[in-house]
Image (cartoon, rainbow, N blue to C red; front, side, top):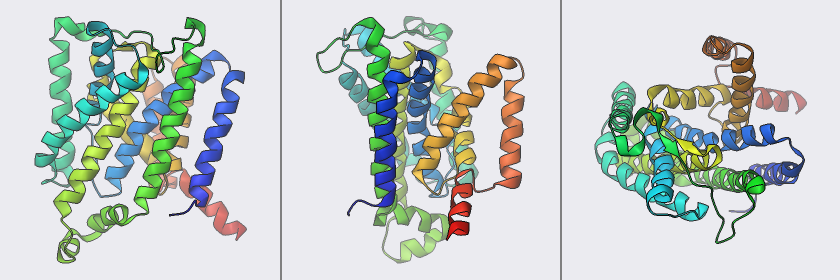
Length: 313
């Protein structure tokens, strides 16, 4: 599969963000790092939603990825960012491989509620575990990079660059996957899974693979989030965290992976400004935004780009 416009566009955006990194103020670079880390989780939610599945429990793997990085640094003395991320991915993939055997049997509200239930089970366990900080969580070690330990003042810049590379690399790979046979199989399952079975494709296997892949993406996001903020807590597995990821997918739309990246940036910027201006009612403002999107742009903000492209043509 050759390079298409989506791949070139995402690659150009990644290069632009890397080039702009040293020029950005610290606060904006931090917001960008958090937004791209969360965008990885959003990409997993988007992958499931294109198959007709809504997960309210991606916080489970987001939390596992973050806590794996935190525990490995706190108790095992590991500081390398690549190893910490790999441990989170391995732990999440193992859990998803086990839970996916059950969840691949269910659809619609049953799938959504089961994912939510498992996420809240982890939240309950973490709040009762004193060794992991209970409800307060604990701090994460300062990361090194393949044996190189940058000065403390430049660690955030290195994490920003790593997050950009990981997020856009995963976005490019996922966009190419969505345009493959397995990617289109998800859309076919959403429309009519009985016909997909008649074609000789195992629906459960397709959904199982997508569920595990979404868990891996969430673990990467959780690990990067933990390294960027320097802290992990059980709120990463709480249902409101998972709800935010679904909110971002609805905000951007499911037609392109770029929608998830752009919507994550927009969400973090709006959240930062609104929570600063109105710290007690920012959820109300975000709810109003979501309501407006549902009423006037049911396919998300990315549909505006497609609408302008059609007019230009």
